[in-house]
Image 1 (tube, rainbow, N blue to C red):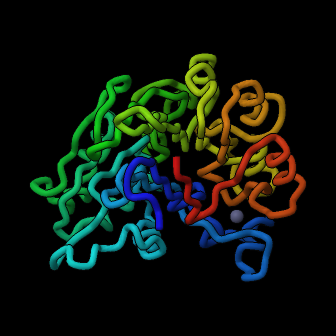
Image 2: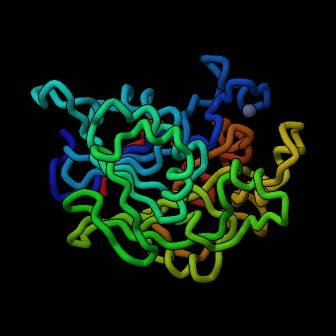
Length: 313
Ligand SMILES: [Zn+2]
Protein backbone atom coordinates (compact mmCIF):
# COMPACT_ATOMS: atom_id res chain seq x y z
CA UNK A 1 0.00 0.00 0.00
CA UNK A 2 1.29 3.47 -0.79
CA UNK A 3 1.86 5.66 2.24
CA UNK A 4 -1.22 7.72 3.09
CA UNK A 5 0.49 10.43 5.09
CA UNK A 6 3.89 11.70 5.99
CA UNK A 7 5.25 11.63 2.48
CA UNK A 8 5.25 13.43 -0.81
CA UNK A 9 4.01 11.15 -3.53
CA UNK A 10 4.85 12.10 -7.12
CA UNK A 11 3.55 10.38 -10.27
CA UNK A 12 4.94 11.29 -13.67
CA UNK A 13 1.74 11.38 -15.71
CA UNK A 14 3.45 12.35 -18.95
CA UNK A 15 7.18 12.34 -19.60
CA UNK A 16 7.28 13.58 -23.20
CA UNK A 17 7.45 17.08 -24.62
CA UNK A 18 4.74 18.49 -26.87
CA UNK A 19 3.56 15.93 -29.43
CA UNK A 20 4.26 12.93 -27.20
CA UNK A 21 6.12 9.77 -28.23
CA UNK A 22 5.43 8.81 -30.93
CA UNK A 23 4.12 12.06 -32.35
CA UNK A 24 1.08 11.45 -34.55
CA UNK A 25 2.80 12.42 -37.80
CA UNK A 26 6.42 11.56 -37.07
CA UNK A 27 8.70 9.05 -38.72
CA UNK A 28 11.95 10.05 -37.00
CA UNK A 29 14.30 7.32 -35.74
CA UNK A 30 12.86 7.51 -32.23
CA UNK A 31 9.18 7.61 -33.22
CA UNK A 32 9.73 4.78 -35.69
CA UNK A 33 10.73 2.54 -32.78
CA UNK A 34 7.86 3.78 -30.64
CA UNK A 35 5.36 2.95 -33.40
CA UNK A 36 6.56 -0.67 -33.18
CA UNK A 37 5.16 -2.38 -30.08
CA UNK A 38 8.38 -4.31 -29.56
CA UNK A 39 10.70 -1.36 -30.26
CA UNK A 40 13.27 0.04 -27.87
CA UNK A 41 11.24 3.20 -27.19
CA UNK A 42 8.35 3.35 -24.70
CA UNK A 43 5.35 5.40 -25.77
CA UNK A 44 5.00 8.54 -23.68
CA UNK A 45 2.26 11.11 -23.16
CA UNK A 46 2.78 14.84 -22.83
CA UNK A 47 4.37 16.71 -19.97
CA UNK A 48 2.67 16.54 -16.56
CA UNK A 49 3.12 15.28 -13.00
CA UNK A 50 0.70 14.74 -10.13
CA UNK A 51 1.69 15.38 -6.51
CA UNK A 52 0.00 14.46 -3.25
CA UNK A 53 0.92 15.01 0.39
CA UNK A 54 -1.84 12.78 1.81
CA UNK A 55 -2.39 10.15 -0.90
CA UNK A 56 -5.99 11.30 -1.46
CA UNK A 57 -5.95 14.83 -2.81
CA UNK A 58 -3.84 15.50 -5.89
CA UNK A 59 -2.32 18.53 -7.51
CA UNK A 60 -1.63 18.18 -11.23
CA UNK A 61 1.30 20.27 -12.43
CA UNK A 62 0.61 21.27 -16.04
CA UNK A 63 -2.43 19.86 -17.75
CA UNK A 64 -1.56 18.18 -21.02
CA UNK A 65 -3.86 17.31 -23.92
CA UNK A 66 -3.35 13.70 -22.74
CA UNK A 67 -4.85 14.25 -19.28
CA UNK A 68 -7.78 11.89 -19.87
CA UNK A 69 -5.45 9.05 -20.89
CA UNK A 70 -3.23 9.89 -17.92
CA UNK A 71 -6.15 9.74 -15.47
CA UNK A 72 -7.22 6.38 -16.94
CA UNK A 73 -3.71 5.02 -16.48
CA UNK A 74 -3.36 6.14 -12.85
CA UNK A 75 -5.95 4.77 -10.37
CA UNK A 76 -5.14 7.37 -7.66
CA UNK A 77 -6.72 9.94 -10.01
CA UNK A 78 -9.95 8.00 -10.61
CA UNK A 79 -13.18 9.19 -8.98
CA UNK A 80 -13.28 7.69 -5.47
CA UNK A 81 -15.76 4.88 -4.90
CA UNK A 82 -18.39 6.33 -2.58
CA UNK A 83 -17.38 9.85 -3.56
CA UNK A 84 -20.89 10.72 -4.76
CA UNK A 85 -22.25 11.00 -8.31
CA UNK A 86 -19.35 13.22 -9.39
CA UNK A 87 -15.89 13.15 -7.82
CA UNK A 88 -12.27 13.73 -8.66
CA UNK A 89 -9.16 13.50 -6.46
CA UNK A 90 -7.69 16.31 -8.61
CA UNK A 91 -8.21 19.42 -6.48
CA UNK A 92 -5.69 21.76 -8.07
CA UNK A 93 -3.81 22.39 -11.30
CA UNK A 94 -0.59 24.41 -11.24
CA UNK A 95 0.82 25.82 -14.48
CA UNK A 96 4.50 26.52 -15.15
CA UNK A 97 3.84 28.20 -18.50
CA UNK A 98 1.07 28.50 -21.09
CA UNK A 99 2.45 26.13 -23.74
CA UNK A 100 -0.17 24.06 -25.57
CA UNK A 101 1.16 20.84 -24.02
CA UNK A 102 0.72 22.37 -20.55
CA UNK A 103 -2.73 24.00 -20.76
CA UNK A 104 -4.82 22.29 -23.46
CA UNK A 105 -5.87 19.53 -21.04
CA UNK A 106 -7.83 22.07 -19.02
CA UNK A 107 -10.48 21.82 -21.73
CA UNK A 108 -10.90 18.14 -20.85
CA UNK A 109 -11.45 19.00 -17.17
CA UNK A 110 -14.71 20.85 -17.82
CA UNK A 111 -17.90 18.95 -16.74
CA UNK A 112 -18.75 21.06 -13.69
CA UNK A 113 -16.04 19.74 -11.39
CA UNK A 114 -14.63 22.18 -8.85
CA UNK A 115 -10.86 22.66 -8.65
CA UNK A 116 -8.45 25.60 -8.62
CA UNK A 117 -6.07 26.62 -11.41
CA UNK A 118 -2.90 28.31 -10.17
CA UNK A 119 -0.48 30.25 -12.37
CA UNK A 120 1.37 33.52 -12.56
CA UNK A 121 -0.69 36.52 -13.64
CA UNK A 122 1.12 36.33 -17.00
CA UNK A 123 0.17 32.69 -17.57
CA UNK A 124 -3.41 33.05 -16.30
CA UNK A 125 -3.69 36.14 -18.52
CA UNK A 126 -3.04 33.98 -21.59
CA UNK A 127 -5.90 31.69 -20.55
CA UNK A 128 -8.05 34.72 -19.82
CA UNK A 129 -7.55 35.99 -23.37
CA UNK A 130 -8.49 32.65 -24.98
CA UNK A 131 -12.30 32.48 -24.76
CA UNK A 132 -12.37 28.70 -25.31
CA UNK A 133 -11.21 28.32 -21.68
CA UNK A 134 -14.51 29.82 -20.58
CA UNK A 135 -15.84 26.24 -20.84
CA UNK A 136 -14.36 26.00 -17.35
CA UNK A 137 -17.11 27.64 -15.32
CA UNK A 138 -15.32 30.21 -13.14
CA UNK A 139 -17.93 29.72 -10.43
CA UNK A 140 -16.48 26.21 -9.98
CA UNK A 141 -12.96 26.48 -11.36
CA UNK A 142 -11.28 29.42 -9.68
CA UNK A 143 -8.17 30.92 -11.27
CA UNK A 144 -5.76 31.93 -8.55
CA UNK A 145 -2.60 33.89 -9.39
CA UNK A 146 0.63 33.26 -7.50
CA UNK A 147 3.68 35.49 -7.32
CA UNK A 148 7.21 34.21 -7.83
CA UNK A 149 9.01 33.94 -4.51
CA UNK A 150 5.80 33.74 -2.49
CA UNK A 151 4.96 30.19 -1.37
CA UNK A 152 1.34 29.08 -1.68
CA UNK A 153 -0.61 25.97 -0.71
CA UNK A 154 -2.57 24.39 -3.58
CA UNK A 155 -3.56 21.56 -1.19
CA UNK A 156 -3.49 21.28 2.57
CA UNK A 157 -0.05 19.97 3.53
CA UNK A 158 1.59 20.92 0.22
CA UNK A 159 3.61 24.08 -0.38
CA UNK A 160 4.80 25.35 -3.76
CA UNK A 161 7.15 28.23 -4.45
CA UNK A 162 7.69 29.39 -8.04
CA UNK A 163 10.79 31.09 -9.41
CA UNK A 164 11.55 32.52 -12.83
CA UNK A 165 13.71 30.47 -15.16
CA UNK A 166 15.09 31.48 -18.57
CA UNK A 167 12.51 30.71 -21.24
CA UNK A 168 10.11 32.22 -23.69
CA UNK A 169 6.44 32.95 -24.06
CA UNK A 170 4.25 30.18 -25.50
CA UNK A 171 4.99 29.43 -29.16
CA UNK A 172 1.56 30.52 -30.37
CA UNK A 173 2.11 33.92 -28.73
CA UNK A 174 5.61 34.18 -30.15
CA UNK A 175 4.24 33.52 -33.66
CA UNK A 176 2.03 36.59 -33.32
CA UNK A 177 5.08 38.68 -32.52
CA UNK A 178 7.10 39.36 -35.66
CA UNK A 179 9.82 41.24 -33.78
CA UNK A 180 12.97 39.90 -32.16
CA UNK A 181 12.01 36.84 -30.11
CA UNK A 182 13.53 36.66 -26.67
CA UNK A 183 14.10 32.94 -26.02
CA UNK A 184 15.94 33.05 -22.72
CA UNK A 185 14.37 35.91 -20.82
CA UNK A 186 13.50 35.43 -17.17
CA UNK A 187 9.85 36.49 -16.95
CA UNK A 188 6.69 35.29 -15.28
CA UNK A 189 5.85 33.37 -18.48
CA UNK A 190 8.12 30.44 -17.53
CA UNK A 191 8.67 29.32 -13.96
CA UNK A 192 10.22 26.43 -12.10
CA UNK A 193 8.66 25.08 -8.92
CA UNK A 194 9.97 24.01 -5.55
CA UNK A 195 7.36 21.62 -4.19
CA UNK A 196 7.51 20.64 -0.54
CA UNK A 197 5.56 19.17 2.32
CA UNK A 198 4.19 21.98 4.44
CA UNK A 199 6.26 20.77 7.40
CA UNK A 200 9.41 21.07 5.27
CA UNK A 201 10.28 17.38 5.63
CA UNK A 202 10.56 16.68 1.88
CA UNK A 203 10.94 18.73 -1.27
CA UNK A 204 11.81 18.57 -4.94
CA UNK A 205 12.11 20.84 -7.96
CA UNK A 206 10.06 20.58 -11.16
CA UNK A 207 11.41 22.46 -14.18
CA UNK A 208 9.94 21.12 -17.44
CA UNK A 209 10.98 24.13 -19.52
CA UNK A 210 14.26 26.00 -19.14
CA UNK A 211 16.51 27.67 -21.71
CA UNK A 212 19.64 28.13 -19.58
CA UNK A 213 21.05 27.26 -16.17
CA UNK A 214 22.04 30.56 -14.64
CA UNK A 215 24.34 30.75 -11.61
CA UNK A 216 21.27 31.70 -9.57
CA UNK A 217 19.34 28.61 -10.70
CA UNK A 218 22.38 26.40 -10.10
CA UNK A 219 22.61 27.76 -6.56
CA UNK A 220 18.93 27.11 -5.98
CA UNK A 221 19.19 23.47 -7.09
CA UNK A 222 22.50 22.71 -5.38
CA UNK A 223 22.13 19.97 -2.75
CA UNK A 224 18.52 19.10 -3.66
CA UNK A 225 17.13 15.61 -3.06
CA UNK A 226 15.35 15.45 -6.41
CA UNK A 227 15.15 17.57 -9.56
CA UNK A 228 12.93 16.89 -12.56
CA UNK A 229 14.45 18.90 -15.41
CA UNK A 230 13.77 19.86 -19.01
CA UNK A 231 15.17 17.09 -21.23
CA UNK A 232 13.72 18.29 -24.52
CA UNK A 233 16.61 17.66 -26.89
CA UNK A 234 19.91 15.80 -26.79
CA UNK A 235 21.67 18.23 -29.13
CA UNK A 236 20.61 21.81 -29.75
CA UNK A 237 20.42 21.25 -33.55
CA UNK A 238 18.79 17.81 -33.53
CA UNK A 239 15.49 18.92 -35.08
CA UNK A 240 17.13 20.45 -38.15
CA UNK A 241 19.79 17.71 -38.35
CA UNK A 242 17.04 15.11 -38.79
CA UNK A 243 14.85 17.15 -41.12
CA UNK A 244 12.14 17.53 -38.44
CA UNK A 245 12.02 21.31 -38.28
CA UNK A 246 14.08 24.46 -38.46
CA UNK A 247 14.09 25.36 -34.78
CA UNK A 248 16.97 24.76 -32.41
CA UNK A 249 16.37 23.76 -28.80
CA UNK A 250 17.36 27.28 -27.74
CA UNK A 251 14.89 28.79 -30.20
CA UNK A 252 12.18 26.65 -28.56
CA UNK A 253 13.29 27.89 -25.12
CA UNK A 254 14.79 24.55 -24.06
CA UNK A 255 18.17 23.28 -22.90
CA UNK A 256 19.95 20.38 -24.56
CA UNK A 257 21.31 17.45 -22.57
CA UNK A 258 24.72 16.89 -24.17
CA UNK A 259 27.98 18.73 -24.63
CA UNK A 260 29.86 21.41 -22.74
CA UNK A 261 26.91 23.81 -22.71
CA UNK A 262 24.34 21.10 -21.95
CA UNK A 263 22.35 20.20 -18.87
CA UNK A 264 24.38 17.12 -17.94
CA UNK A 265 27.55 19.23 -17.75
CA UNK A 266 25.79 22.06 -15.91
CA UNK A 267 24.57 19.69 -13.18
CA UNK A 268 27.92 17.95 -12.75
CA UNK A 269 28.93 19.89 -9.64
CA UNK A 270 25.51 20.53 -8.14
CA UNK A 271 25.28 17.61 -5.69
CA UNK A 272 21.67 16.78 -6.65
CA UNK A 273 20.85 13.34 -5.22
CA UNK A 274 18.34 12.26 -7.89
CA UNK A 275 18.19 13.81 -11.38
CA UNK A 276 15.36 12.97 -13.75
CA UNK A 277 14.82 14.26 -17.27
CA UNK A 278 11.21 15.08 -18.14
CA UNK A 279 9.58 16.85 -21.10
CA UNK A 280 11.67 14.74 -23.48
CA UNK A 281 11.04 15.41 -27.15
CA UNK A 282 10.40 12.53 -29.54
CA UNK A 283 13.52 13.51 -31.51
CA UNK A 284 15.78 12.81 -28.50
CA UNK A 285 17.86 9.62 -28.93
CA UNK A 286 18.18 9.24 -25.15
CA UNK A 287 14.62 7.83 -25.34
CA UNK A 288 16.03 4.76 -27.11
CA UNK A 289 16.85 2.12 -24.51
CA UNK A 290 20.36 0.85 -25.05
CA UNK A 291 21.41 3.86 -27.13
CA UNK A 292 24.80 5.52 -26.70
CA UNK A 293 23.01 8.68 -25.59
CA UNK A 294 20.90 6.88 -22.96
CA UNK A 295 24.05 5.22 -21.62
CA UNK A 296 25.85 8.57 -21.43
CA UNK A 297 22.97 10.20 -19.54
CA UNK A 298 22.75 7.28 -17.10
CA UNK A 299 26.50 7.21 -16.59
CA UNK A 300 26.22 10.85 -15.50
CA UNK A 301 23.60 9.86 -12.92
CA UNK A 302 20.48 10.86 -14.86
CA UNK A 303 17.23 8.95 -15.23
CA UNK A 304 14.90 9.37 -18.19
CA UNK A 305 11.34 9.65 -16.85
CA UNK A 306 8.62 7.36 -18.16
CA UNK A 307 4.87 7.56 -17.84
CA UNK A 308 3.68 6.13 -14.54
CA UNK A 309 7.05 6.61 -12.84
CA UNK A 310 6.41 7.12 -9.15
CA UNK A 311 8.63 8.67 -6.52
CA UNK A 312 7.91 8.86 -2.80
CA UNK A 313 9.90 11.35 -0.73
ZN1 LIG B 1 9.58 11.80 -33.86
